[in-house]
Image (cartoon, rainbow, N blue to C red; front, side, top):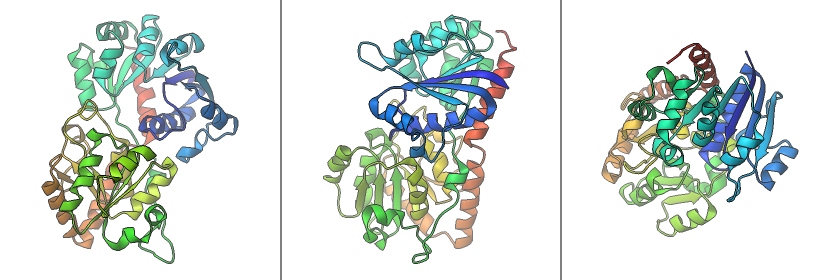
Length: 385
């Protein structure tokens, strides 16, 4: 067991963004595997208040591990997080883990064992000299890159990173939080979670639910516009800011229900309350080719039928007809056909689909991810390029 691990990320906890969900869960998954865990995050008055009141992790339905110390680092225009962290973080530890390319480069060039978690390689390349980063990683036995998807890994290998310096580690899910629906005695087929946001009218038609960012490449606008091709379906979107929701709502009709983001701990009840879950990603955007969406694993774990845009980066997880239904990105007609396929499934077929989805999700828990990363790093420490 490692004695001292430092985890640093320019993430704000709590927040509505997916990166904060991942960071919170990784902290809680890593803590039982090490003796002392120092966590460095971007500061802010509200974050300090949450720390002082012990509520940093409750937004996610989690509790701060006893052996994890949370520190906040300045994130100012004149002194961004990466620069401030270099002076604030301890100089020595058994292992440094970060989502920051500048921090990873600095630590590796000082000969420290560092794992850099990459999500979008082009963004990494805009933040640091990639050739320097890879050279530094090659020079330190205990340094390597954690790629969030196969596409991220392939990019780093094309840039010269040796295969043994690379680990593919998709995002994860807390199975215990997402796999158990809660139903009310008055309406045993529903948890009532959607009605609490939108009123009982939401149940007048089968509900297709999307949770997450309302950014264009994630497909929220496409989904809202596709409502006209799904006359027998209510579409619910939960995510984004109040301003983003207002702007999107102005462009939709009565069959589309929109609500700003809610606490992550409240998402499971929504997923179980819907009739189908959708990932309407478009086939363009800087994030789409590399992503490993949190919602992918949460959707699967819920057992609610999943509809997903057929983008290449998801194909290592999704198996059309087996654990999901896919459709051509940006095609309302294809989405309609996928919905019809779900509607014509028999109850035994739906039960089989649910089992396959949850079996898939069971391979991607946060605990498994943390164990995989630390086991790989221990092997990595004994290798020399």
